Length: 89
Image 1 (tube, rainbow, N blue to C red):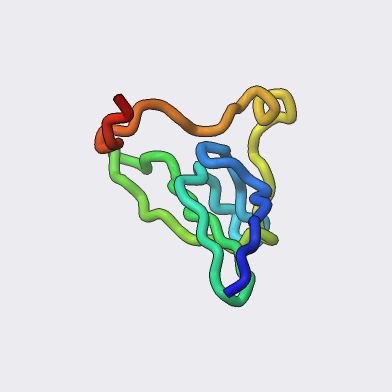
Image 2 (image 1 turned 120 degrees about the horizontal axis):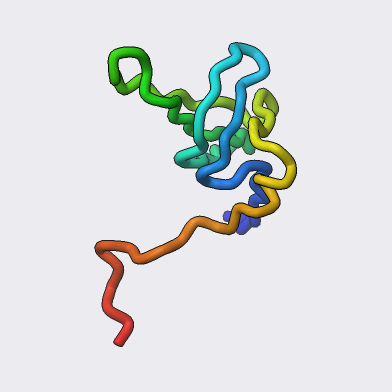
């Protein structure tokens, strides 16, 4: 099988908007399918009455950044301590 490097348009943690439905939220995961389709899982804000709304997978072509250009430039790659990472000592 061919090894390809995918270039993702949106970063994890970035705020995005679906141009077809108007759905807005934060990118929490990305999926690449064998057919080349790239999708992002978008998690919306907590809804009315503190209810957690459902996340949705959206094709990359339907999304636009909902952040200002300067906010997008300031974001770094996600990171931090992984709670179940192997000890590197």
